Image (tube, rainbow, N blue to C red):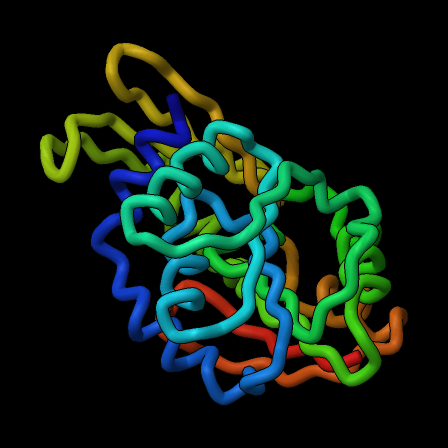
Amino acid sequence: MFAKAYDLLMADVDYEQIYEWLKPHFKNTDLIIDAGCGSGYLLLELLNHGHQAIGIDIDSSMLSIALDKLRENHVETNLYEHDLRNPMNAQADVIIAMFDVANYFKGIKKVFKNIHQALYDGGRFIFDIYKKEVLVDYQNYSEIEDEPISYAWRIETNGHLMTHYVEFEDEMDIVKQYVYDLDYYLDILKSLGFTYEVSDGIDSRKHYIVAKK
């Protein structure tokens, strides 16, 4: 049920704006992997702009929604169910992991290693992560809304753990994310041989990182 709620809540994100931020890091001939593509909004944006892109996600329900979205918009690409903690067995020029995908992992080194191995030399890994301040800002956060859907959302934080409780259509989903210091992520990138740049981007709650193999 979380996949459906997630898709509805993410419908009003300005994906064109996100694409414009990403575009300078793309070449026309790049193969792009959208790692943690979710229900496919950003993947659709890439395809609509003529990029060669595929989507992977661990959640089959998300991929099912993404497939429907692509079909409704008359575009095609490959979607794969895959856990980023396992090798991808694929090669790409660019791998993106947007919308705090990295924060869903308690430990990120294996994920980053698999991404590094899946990139061609000179390839780029582009992702965002929450700034550590969200652990304070979202402690005991709650909201109840009727638009765009009827839902209740509560957040608890404990140490590095941020736990989301999402009630939708009389079901409760519990989603865990992990928020660490920026240096934790950068040290792992450096140990794998990545060079990187860190910037602020569209969402002030996040760091945006472009790493190059």
